[in-house]
Image (cartoon, rainbow, N blue to C red; front, side, top):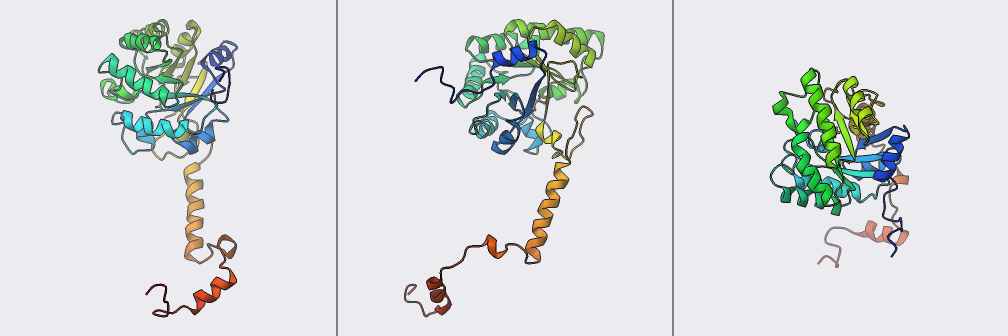
Length: 293
Ligand code: KIV
């Protein structure tokens, strides 16, 4: 079979995304954690992120720290089964890239074997060696700087980063270190827009912002936030386009009410018994059946 056959290849590739960003066309990425959210988002985004935010958005954790490789693999496989056309990026969870390079390569390589086209990991200069090792093994890496949720305790909470001169320059330098190490793109989360703009304009790889203002090469949001499915406090950078939770709950309540008043199911939603079976069923009485004796 030709390697140029496109049946299994995503329509969106890393070189295409980089070209799109260079042409000034903004990139769009959303999270997807299962087949339903993948099918919803795939036709309208450039990149699908199986984010470790699945931990707080879908699994009920307070933060992303409890999310394991087993959980990520489970969600990635569900998304990958839909064969998305968007570039599929899988988030390396806490402790999956911190312990040893062997461990990291195994975990990240496993993501690619399950259908991801790239992995994402958090952190700056201290991740340079890790990024280099992954890229060396043909594993494309998206970096993630600024408010990095896996550092929630080190940061003292989910706080905007890079407001002070020293921290801002540190993030700018980290961005360049990650680009040199081989990252194909960077997520910039929770940093001032001017800093994100400076990073974006001085890098040659695309930046994807979340709470980083309008000057990034693209934007990412958690799909459940965009659709209004999350009930918790939403940060100010989130724009919700539909009150999904309330609308869906109203639909469910309507169904429950129909069941309670006998309006669901209607005859058209049921299966009919053929006439001959109807007679046999009607004639049956307890102890009259030889079949059950
Ligand atoms: O896990 C996630 O959803 C993320 C995005 C917020 C970038 O890392």
